[in-house]
Image 1: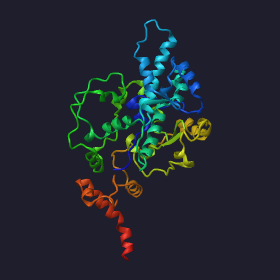
Image 2: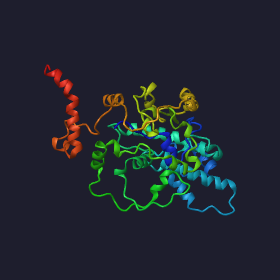
Image 3: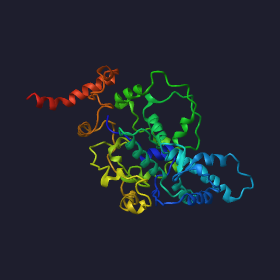
Length: 376
């Protein structure tokens, strides 16, 4: 079938997050516990208890307590702003950039929510996508036991494009002036059938045919009906650029998924997704670093995003070129699990049709080496 991925278009259309804007960078400032408390009080209007601070993070339960008291009708502007900042912090730490704990938010966000007017200038969509790409890369490592990130975005993206794995829903209400993801707020008809465990979805995805994947779920009519902010960054939806989020640099490569934009898919240009060891950076290992300065070269590429649009030929079919299919089969893993893993018993390996498919693919890929061994 070929490659597919979440792009800047998906983030803006599904969640309405701005993609065309300033990069979300970070100057990591080291603060004492007392300085952290002062900062929380200055920006949010309350003094956190010691137990509410975990290193450079604030427990979200401390904000929930503050928000249980309604805003008075005659509240001063600053109090209203403090409430708005707390809601934004819960959104940032609980959904868009959630960590593995899911109940804390980095105090680094206080420097952003302090200026509510300036928040609208940032590319929250590209930062969210960079976070998702990075967390997915981290999650696929064998040593990873917990992970965080905007995985709800990944789930909704899959529901929009793979009808066979969607949950059964009651008729969705009119979503009105909301992003596309708003249609998934309808109540589900019930729990997944007993057979729909992880093995069901793995087998389904392994055997997915091209006609079972919706390459372009957002028709022109559907896009036109969305709020303007869901289409604000349309000019850079196909920009081949680095995505910036604090210490993270990930790469947006729409040339690898041209069919998602209605264009012919040819062999894409090579891309180094980990230049200069970018995937090895983390915040805890570099306290006090000015990441905006450290990543200044990549930020310059992002600032030139308007000139980085990938162009192509309009496609009359979603089938890619033969050259692309040859390249894809040489550069990808054709099965989800590793059927050659000797720790797997044959009975487990051959469960379901996808297991048989994986086993046969493994044997096929071994044929050249077997021929060499036996002198063929």
